[in-house]
Amino acid sequence: MESILDSLQEIQVIALAGVLILLFIWESLHPFYAYFTESFKDRGKHVFRNLVIGAINGLLVSVIFVGLWLSASVWAEGNRFGIMHWLQDATGLPLWAHAAGAILLLDFWTYAWHRMNHEIPFFWRFHSVHHSDNKMDVTTASRFHLGEIFFSSIFRIPLIALFGVYLWELVLYEIVMFAVVQFHHANVGLPEKYDRILRTIIVTPNMHRVHHSRWQPETDSNYSSLFSIWDRLARTFRLNPKPETIKLGLEQFDSEEDQTVKGMFKTPVKNPARDES
Image (cartoon, rainbow, N blue to C red; front, side):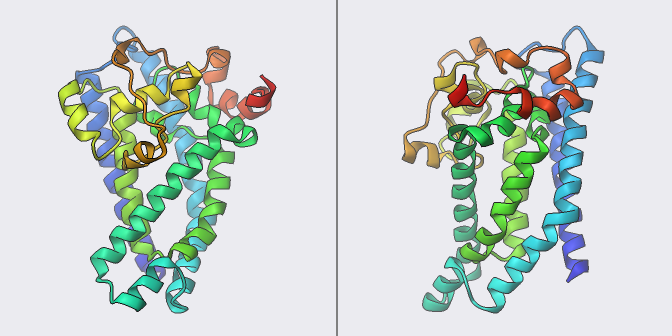
């Protein structure tokens, strides 16, 4: 079982590293915002800081939580517990339909969790690290406070069992979802006509740029990570007809110190909860 888990993790790392490199090249050749056109050094610092945060989070998940997720998945399968296992046993659901259902359930939870991070002041303290990036690019997809990753990983343990998710379904979802997350954070100049077509199904750069706006009515919209349907169903979908005018980041965290790895770790302590501001 450990060898299977190691193989799945290896596939996930290789796939997502490949997507990151391709998007990094794309945004270098054809950027949407001109953040770093005059300073390669500034871009290097930005990339380094975000990827260091991402690596620390990845280490936490690998060492502590992957084994717990595996245990929850194996227990649910062995006891035929969870929504998708119940449906499979009751209807003879084929494997592809089981996987599709599991992915939809996981993606709905990701939407709900993201929205909770905006609406619950305690969680916003941690999530604001992600939103404080005023030069959003593909590496912003990895920029999350360790506290947010810890809480999201804890919640996932019972949900994996409740949803009846096979481990390979979780890994497949993680690969596809995070590839799309990297895509919609990337500073790529995707023409609007293509963005419009893609966002009928998935979250796109122009859709997610609205979410990273400093203006709170825009920040509190577009919570979806993979499929855009959740925002449409929950009426949290929002577009800005001039995405190039959107100012990204959080005003109170524009200083150089706040953008360092140390500053990001300190953000939850410095950041007033939303109901206190």
